[in-house]
Length: 293
Ligand code: NAD
Image (cartoon, rainbow, N blue to C red; front, side, top):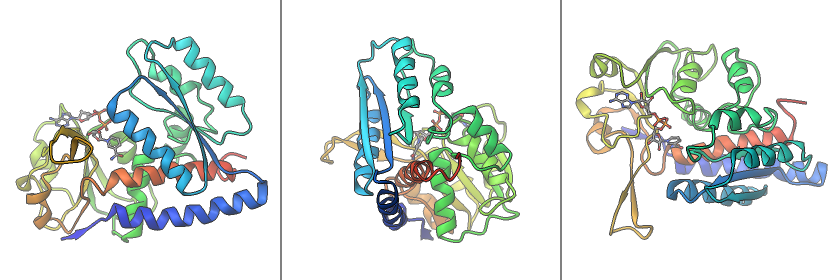
């Protein structure tokens, strides 16, 4: 078993991003700028946004956080998105999900100017991704692709089984792995909560991508000898043994699956760190006008 080491790859790619950000600053007189909007006080969201902001600063980006109480109206939030859309000093805008129930996430996602949609959730970016056109790829799948590329994992002709069909991970991941590109060219099976014979299907996978949100969902008996296992899950449990008061678990039973896998991502230290890289790369590409002129 070999580790797909998110810590190593993310640090390496962050250095490359920092070098390019310095070039942007030298050429244009300003840093790439990411704005994040956070509504409410969800513990997980707070952590993710803080980490995104911190990493922006580390690579020489500017970052701004706009906070709202969870009682903010949909109208006020949409007006803020529009204001940021119009701001020439902003390259990327993300609205941290989930949003409170009275706000329609689809409306917010579609309100973001697709040229600043560095989370890659806007239908224009998703449509362009489908057609293999330049676009902002959703940050988590993008990070996974960068990881597979770094370790030169051969994906062509392989059977990739994605578990989970969310708009932000499972569905885009299935499309990306099937595209005629590298990484890609897989035969893909997208599985979900209504899939029959899930275990049997996963057992036939050369590459497993688990994005379910259930600790230890993927067990050793579900994984073929030599499979590549990508664990997207982040399941937080209260812990008295960690400084943060939480412990993170993936969707894969790492201890028992790892000996069977050829490559596997740990949690923490795997896909989560690569998601940040996807976001930073998209923000940099926006600042350099690489995708939309
Ligand atoms: P989600 O919660 O929106 O959807 C879960 C998916 O799992 C659904 O499509 C559902 O059909 C499927 N599912 C649920 N029960 C199932 C079952 N018994 N059998 C088969 N499929 C089943 O998912 P999400 O937003 O993609 O998040 C999934 C996990 O990934 C969560 O733990 C989340 O915290 C984590 N996540 C991690 C990152 C990262 O950067 N590492 C990014 C996004 C999400």
